[in-house]
Amino acid sequence: MPPTAILTVASKARRTLTLTIAAALGAGVMVAIPSAVSAAETTLGAAAAQSGRYFGAAIAAGRLGDSTYVNILNREFNSVTAENEMKWDATEPSRGSFNYTNGDRIANHAIARGMKIRGHALLWHAQMPGWAQSLSGSTLRSAAINHVTQVATHYRGKIHSWDVVNEAFADGTSGGRRDSSLQRTGNDWIEAAFRAARAADPGAKLCYNDYNTDGINAKSTGIYNMVRDFKSRGVPIDCVGFQSHLTNSVPGDYQANLQRFADLGVDVQITELDISGSNQANVYATVTRACLNVARCTGITVWGIRDSDSWRTGQNPLLFDAAGNKKAAYTSVLNALNAATPNPSPTPTVTPPPGGPCRVGYTLNAWNNGFTSAITVTNTGSSAINGWSLVFTLPSGQSITGGWNATYSPASGQVTARNVSYNGSIPAGGSVEIGFQATHTGNTAAPSAFTLNGSTCSRA
Ligand code: G3I
Image (cartoon, rainbow, N blue to C red; front, side, top):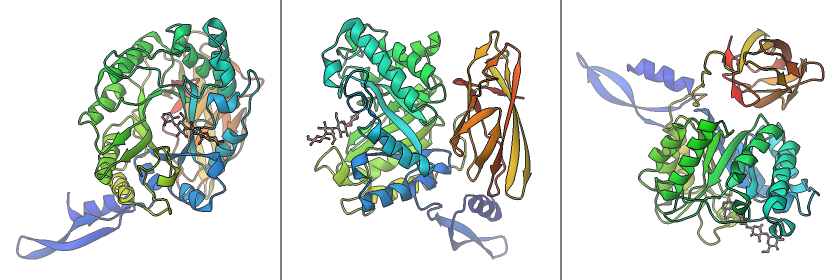
């Protein structure tokens, strides 16, 4: 690539180049070539966004009054996970009585700042409320499914990805399920949970999340087999979370493991990253690069902000020290993110087979700082759709100010358009027309993909 081309590419990515006079071509002509590329972006979230990924942190509602903590959160991260506040014991402390106070504090903080939200976790054998711990069999099953339905409904339209089921596989060599009261309700408890979550929030990606799955081992292979089975039987699963609680090293087949799951047709996400040990900065960079090298690895979440916020007391496994200073691990992650090939949409668009579930036409009329978009949604399936949600991500700088024939929420980022009372039913072969007005800051690109009730639509 000639130097001018390098400069063009780099400036598109808003990179600052450090140039050195380094080579002579032909008859002693000196040319400048780049010897180093300094950080294109100066925060984790912005650096990850260059390749269409998010960079998130697990946060605690109780720390939202700590200004050092909140300043780092707001500056660096564009996704959050509630560390404890959306778990079963927090959200349903007594049966049928739901408490979203602290989960909502986190969700509202994120929504107000355009951050994505990872929902964690609908069902998990740990942190079950006492009343659920005392249940078993069909009583526990129905309480668990009701919990999924209620919580996913409460947060419908706000959650980017839900950890529907957390840590259901056994450690060790069995590759099988962990024994738990949930598992004893029947082996199909996981798929029942995923189906309930899909029905409650069709716009959220539904993930299975676990630890000690960072390389190709018996546990990760057991999960791999479950995901392959779910995909083959149409059980709704969209993503697998790899917690990645690591100590000083990462398995050599970490990236290959992510890739084999991605090849099943699910997204992969690094969901609870923290790394202890003296090799911390290098391992953080290796993990970050592995995600960047897998097209369907859509984002990374670290499990806390400062070392003093970590559940791993005394191990200092995070990117900021107790005083909020950036550590060497921070710099290595930022540099790795900035070295990624710019690509605002890493997830390959899935082209549904002919006669697939939906087709979307999108036209846009723009002026200086505004535009209107008209969207035609066609049901290309063989049966009527009753009740629909269309999910798409607006390019950065675009924000919806009003719309027609659907409700739109939130106004920017990943938007869910929901039917209104008079157009919820789309007969087979039928269409609905919806649209919205929006502002923009120069980028009038169309969303790269549309999902109707969880299925990717083809484009008209
Ligand atoms: O809020 C109470 C507080 O009122 C009380 O005084 C104190 C006394 O111990 O406990 C506080 O609750 C603790 C809670 O964290 C909030 O700090 C719980 O005891 C403690 O068990 C809980 O630990 C959480 C742990 O999950 C529970 O298993 C950690 O914060 C949280 O980081 C951790 O997260 C898990 C993921 O959900 C799943 N993957 C593993 C990961 C690490 O264990």
